[in-house]
Image (tube, rainbow, N blue to C red; front, side, top):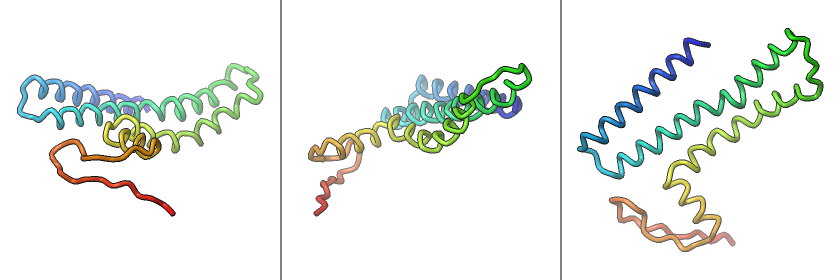
Length: 130
């Protein structure tokens, strides 16, 4: 497990340094740079969320009996957190990537949708369900 976490951290730090270096050099549009930053943040959170919801609770579940601690019904937290993970993981992308977030908020606020940001000239229209 240490090897897998080590490789994740190495690749993450290397990617962060490369993105930072490309920001200084230029040659990439602001939109691309912004999207790369959003995707990197989402990737970091999607790496941290399994640790919080799966690895840490399950590790505690295995370690606690060695110390003869009585956790009682708190052991059920592990089952709940493991079952919450698949529902929470995609939410990271939906709320950290700006275009997805705007679309979701516009859908639920029922605002009239206008032109899409960026280089496209496509116009969105609101669907009415009858």
